[in-house]
Image (cartoon, rainbow, N blue to C red):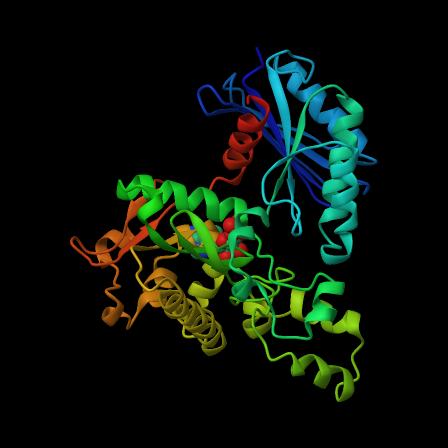
Length: 401
Ligand code: AMP
């Protein structure tokens, strides 16, 4: 019999986030984060939820991902949750880019690793770090099944006409340029959980899912399958985000090169790190932006208006894509916690049957819930995302087959 526990690893370039879950009960046994790997001031914060113990913090330097994972293994072992336990069924890895090949989670072997490596040119910031996590975990537990769960996979069901950019097809094919979409694990989880909230079979539901975190993306979901999404070849396209511009006239890039004399790398940094809310008003945290608006700050108000105008455009566009919409679902840091953003995202869309109930929308809750008025034609819902649970479920389902 295979075990029931799954370790979920989300490996970034200088950090590893982890959660150990028991899939029989779908409970978290431990959660933690190693930060600033390879820097002097590393920090490991580990919380053993199964023992009810408080958070333990270590501040010893962690040289690399191997040292990070060994430190995590020691912390888990100290709580009787060691990685050598027969109860550990698998390790599930978050992998950002799965390209066209990975439309489902994949049991990791040398060939899968080579394919993730081949996708590095389209995900230069993420896939190398994800690979480091995979290689390190395999070295630590060579016989344990390990599964890659891809951020792009949920969007692989998009029809070709939604995924294609209208550029020279030969060049697009040669360089694998197309819309892939990201945050797929979150969109998949939230779409399924929203169907449960609505007490409906996902197969008969049309949803617009708005994942609004520091990164932000929208998806149109028909019958549980993605039919369009706002992020593209990279996570830069689509909605206005914390520090990314989202949609922009591509000619802005030529203009910045030819007229402003910026290099490609400078434009890349500008659009990915110094744009979006941060570029517009200097802050990327919606809480701070709301505080500034309340104090009468015009730049913060404009940033909010640009952000929510783009959201409304996508809500309208995905109505047209889907034909009929049953629910608009908000998730992630901003989507779950910002009533003014939810209100503004559907403001003036009464003709679409969309509205929020002011009291329900501002009520504090961490539960999936409806915020539309009773009897509304289109439901507006808030569903907290849980990407780790989704990765653990997909991983466990694959190894328990
Ligand atoms: P995420 O990427 O999902 O972790 O979301 C992070 C973002 O959520 C932050 O940058 C904040 O802008 C936003 N956020 C978190 N809590 C709140 C809150 N209470 N009100 C508004 N925005 C929030």
